Amino acid sequence: MDPAIFAVGEPFKKNTVQRMLTNPVYLGKITHYAQNKIYNGVHKPIVSRELWEQVQTVIRRRIHDSNAFCHYKFHKTVLADKLYDDKGKKFRFTSSKNQHRKLLYYYNGVGGHYLPVEQLDNFVLGVLRQTDLEELEPLADRIGITDKQMRSWIVKATCQTAGKAHYLTILLDEKQIKIDLINCPKITETQERKALSVVRMADNLYVHSTFMVDNVSSVKLQNGSARNILTVRQLNESLVRGVARGWQLKKRIEQGLNIRELEQEQHMTKRTIMRYINLCYLSPRIVADILEYKNPANLTLREFMNLADSQMDFAEQEKVWSP
Image 1 (spheres, rainbow, N blue to C red):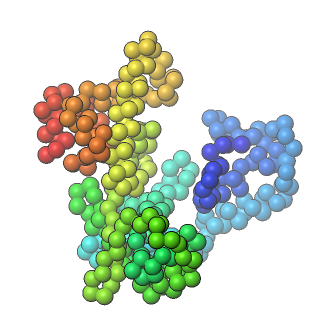
Image 2: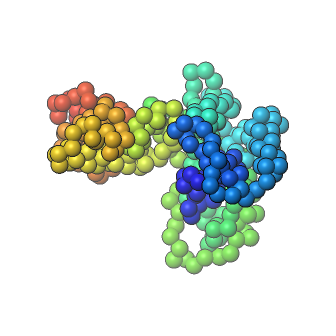
Image 3: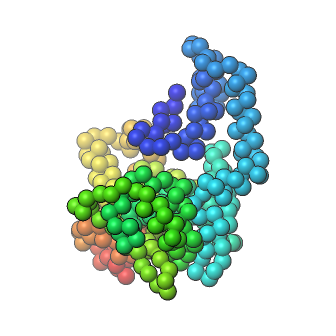
């Protein structure tokens, strides 16, 4: 069985459950992913063929049934019909496919922004978990508050974009929050306070946060079709990991490995390896900034690599890094 289907210590996500339910290992079969073929296994099936087909029928119907999709949009997603841009235009839904996986996005029209639904929803729920709501219900222990309850706290969210940064403002339902928090158990005053503060304007309650959208990670540079929602800190952490990976690859070459051997060992292309290694030849000032989590121009890892590729002179690198 594919070990990637297990979510250790975390709730199962929709895609994880779907992969489990469509895995033919329960029928006594084995999937050869490289050949995209299914073979009979040596183990015995643990479900009947009839039950298996019933499950597959339900899954296919949920994928293709527009009513089921609408139910998912409005009852499972966090920002359906609640997300607007700074001009008051509502974000709608669109989707794409990547290696047979359906990817769902919030988008605000042609030439606008595409924000991955699952990642933005998780980001918003994370923001709400970090928000200090002491003024509404002091010492409420929110550990039992569910995602569904937090979804009901959101009246409207506005996403304003400036350069690479997206500024999210969430209008909260103060009355609903109080109803949910008043039923929570109490905690001691020594409990660590939450990181984000609520803001009251014109008798309304808001919380603000910032995120970036990046389509690379320091683990797999080629994953250009996936968009990742990152906080500014996470974006900076990706640069730290990128530099560390570059020095790791450089050390392997110094230990005697040639590029072909390194490609096989790291499962990377030569171009990707060289892009990482180029990060070892950055201005000392830039490296110092990275280690202090400073990123003046909010460069993504891809842009950071482009900088290292195109500029060898330290002064020119620093101009791009801190314009």
